[in-house]
Image (cartoon, rainbow, N blue to C red; front, side, top):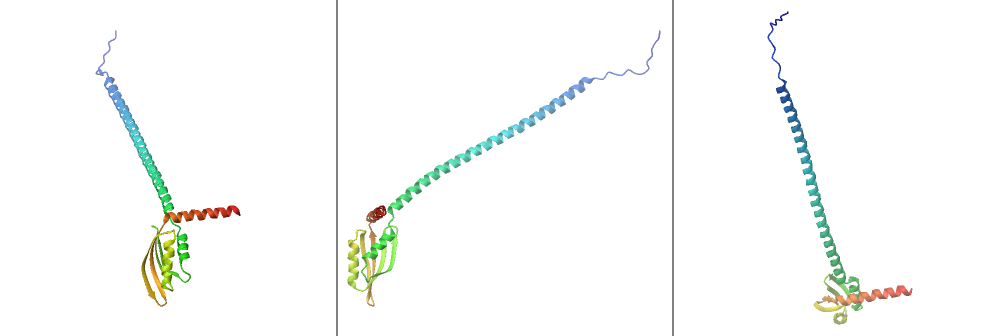
Length: 190
């Protein structure tokens, strides 16, 4: 019988349970940390996407409001242009009418035509009766609603008279329409 004698002290058995629990805890902690970072980043991207969507919606609303404002402005501008065209007198026709009424030896010194159908006119005449004749002719014109002689100045063999004339807008428009109809009729006959 053999007897074994071991003089070496017995080694205690290693406990791997603590190491495995610690390792598992570290791995789980890392996984939780990584998943938290990934979730945080995805939330940030979602927030950015929503903010961009909100900005896009706000821009679209702004553009829609501007378009509505522009449409309204265009409509008002069109109405204003139409109204102005209806109120506008042909300055050429006014000038032709005023020149046509002048006596043969009369001439204009100054002519000012305003948009509100008023004319300030200064004319030169050789005789005083030419001034009254011109005043009478303008007074009889259907284009003139009111005429006032502001001044008559006598110079060397001439008279210079200043007139304020208020024009009849509707009469000028009728004359203009009749003239355009006559022109169309002449072009049809050609």
